[in-house]
Length: 300
Image (tube, rainbow, N blue to C red; front, side, top):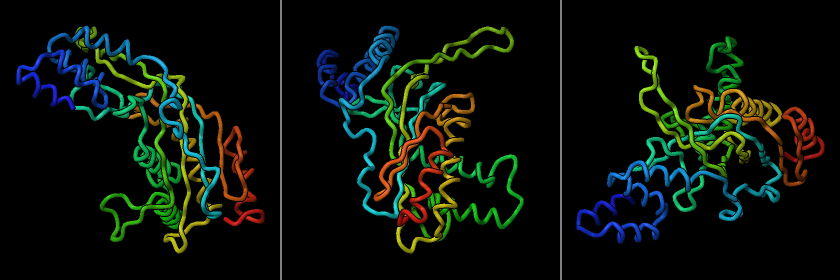
């Protein structure tokens, strides 16, 4: 979208006309301040953006179904999980805009301007956490070949093939949903010179700040004859363990190596076609509460 502005400016169209047109485009405000930034008014453009972007939003005002409704699952063989969490450290995922007043804008929806974590990001990070928890990767790789093959089969059952992996593509039994966040904040990293032990040039990061709440939503939807198959009672506890480790230990941010993106879990929920909804404070309590769905009281 920003290219439209440079075309107009190159044709000697007034800046005012260009900025007026920006309001008709998705993310028009960001494009407006970006034009001002690249016109040379960098400090004012950055300050205006940071003042306007900072704060809270009510996501439900824009997207009523921001959190998926699993109350009417289509099959009794399906299970859905939701995990409510609160960020303890900043969350960051780089936006894909080519031009922005900040070097590191957070990923946002182009229409509503709301930060979000994509479903594909959840899938990739949770696959990695699942591998860590089952010791397929990490400092303590499972030495037992039989257990490793079992864990690999579970991974394929849940997540499917990665790109270029295997002869036949399998999408896996899990369906992921994006997570919306309703706050935007800013962090400044000031790298220090080793020689002078002084700051060099501040680097601005647009982030989702600590204290922001979000919900991870996952649907477990295996189909008849799915291969490799897996018993829910075996594979789902490992999945829930990976969810907990990812959120509370590893972090879900693109900069999790510096501690960003860790969270505390507030609630666990599970959904079933005939079993209804169960809500618990802890992972173990949730798993105990849904045992009847897996044997005796359910048809899963």
